Length: 332
Image 1 (cartoon, one colour):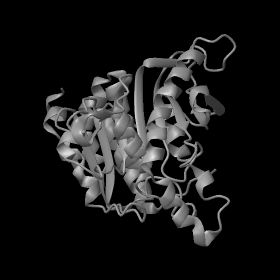
Image 2 (spheres, rainbow, N blue to C red; image 1 turned 30 degrees about the vertical axis):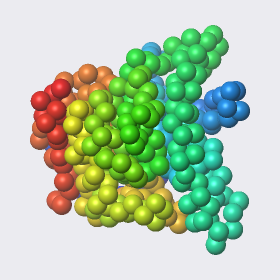
Image 3 (cartoon, rainbow, N blue to C red; image 1 turned 45 degrees about the vertical axis):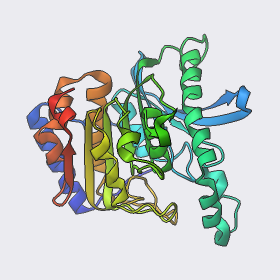
Image 4 (tube, one colour; image 1 turned 90 degrees about the vertical axis):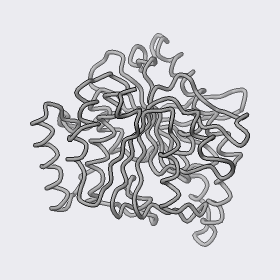
């Protein structure tokens, strides 16, 4: 599939590449060609649940750090291949998890006038609990497959370095397994095997104090949102997306707020399913997330300097906002 970019986006790509090359670290540099991905099914017998996954593998055959991705409401394991391809080309095994009950099955066989109601019904606490419980099951299965003779993934996964990411409902899933607590602080779905997290379109808790909810997260976090990042489901406005970052007081955290980016700017299709060719946000998304993964999952000092220095700023356009909290600045 070819991707077409506007002249403005092309100019931005050129600027980012030149400045990154001058700095000695380039998060956009990859080999030419497409990455081969494979599909699998993760079976969770105790819950009688089958999780479709798509795995993008790097060219190198040694153990690669793992990045998990949780789709938004109504999505699937086939969403956001631009992320899977780029991250895999940068040396990561990228696993896109599909969550039955809040995936594309919610709307695919539903008449157009009834789809929004079906989607709202699927944006439930029940489905969030299903989602967060999917993640340790996937990690357990990947661990088994990594040592299973004859399995295509045998020896391909570095499961000591696992990143978690997701968009929208997938961001809420990511927040939850990264350590967010729920009202009263007594409920947590934290997954201790995760070492870094990226949230695309994060959301504050529906109930309770955000400081209490997010103050329990300890792993490095990168948050991405936009000035027009509103959602018709859940009544989450762009201003609500900004209520997570200030409360990540115990974790190194970075945040970008893209000027005029909408809720769909982080994917490859708009709300009607049309391709978003020429999306100017994809290049800085790839640059920032790659540097974050390289720093957090590979311990790359150059990536860390790029992320917290002038490199990240150079990847952004006028009007975009880039923030670091105290722990990110201090390198803790």
